[in-house]
Image 1 (spheres, rainbow over the protein chains, first blue to last red):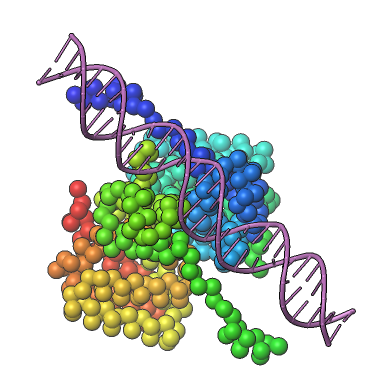
Image 2 (image 1 turned 90 degrees about the vertical axis):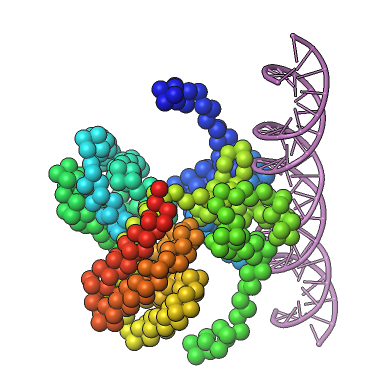
Length: 227
Length: 227
DNA sequence: TTCGGTCTTATGGTATACCATCATACAGGC
DNA sequence: GCCTGTATGATGGTATACCATAAGACCGAA
């Protein structure tokens, strides 16, 4: 019975997320995160309908979703705009990330086996490659994949969702910090330090390194836009 | 000029959040949090239309919002249901709360002035009153107001949003834990301990007390539903 | 009786129509 | 020429109509 379960599971038809709404959600989210829609831009529903080729129902539902995610802000009697980011918000987001990532990193250092470490190494290599190419978006992807592995290893799926969502809110800021000279040099080395501690299974030290890393990123961010 | 600014501000017409959508969102959220709609229940759109007296557009937008909040789950090809809560999710949520609340409590202990302490005392009194009446919902409200003050004092508005949202996902569980004999006795005293440390402006001790409090709550929760 | 096919219904996905309101522009009177 | 009242358009809020499909009921034949 159990032997059958696996092969049969392979037959299962995955639901193609082919609903217009999900596709539109993905596109809009990316448009905002990538900066194609700049903060403060009005999101006029009918215009979006034309741009995405769907009806207002779909657009409005997507906007509701993005609103709950914090990527879109509703101005009463004026409609939705791309969420703006005050420095104070960014500051708070970095703080929360520090708390959650440090916890995840510590847990990861406790349980990491060879498989996890191998995955992390792979992300690190990717990180090196992209930093040498000076590609902020590449660095961002590599960093994301590094942390995703860490959160998954510790079973922190919900925390990962939260961190991802927060990161999407500061994505533009992150790209700016990554374009900074100081960041391109110190960033990778700090992440390597985190990995080194995980590799040796030293939770406390790993968490400390993680906090330092986030704090450094926050400091650069503040120097860029801290009003 | 500046002297005029204040009196004139009083004239400002606040936008009454009178949109059907917002009202429906509030009602639905409360219905789920309060347990009126039990986890796993199908949320049939047309039925909800009748129950709330609004159109499907409104209902669907509300569902999108609640979906993003994690209170509603979408089953492909079957529609929305009230989100179910696995123990592993609850465990993670308690962990995240521990991290965020401890941080907030520590910061609060650093900056708390008399005004904040007075507010906290008020919440504590309310907590005592409700625990003596053995009113789980009252206790929940008092605890919420206690923590809200703490997060606000430290300027952690975003973290507060996150914690509130997480709490709404485990609201039923929280009520159950509060109906437990052990909880009704130890809960208030642990919160008092947190306050005592804040009052003395001892960040580290306050954070430790907070972690202990959340850990205790998680332990009781696990004893109730930990599968 | 059991299997297979077909019809019906429930229900979500999508598009569209209509209304209220705010903002802008324009016109007329002082 | 400036101020005020009115018309017009842009845009969000809400309701409704239509379609596709999945799940169940019903029915007939082997």
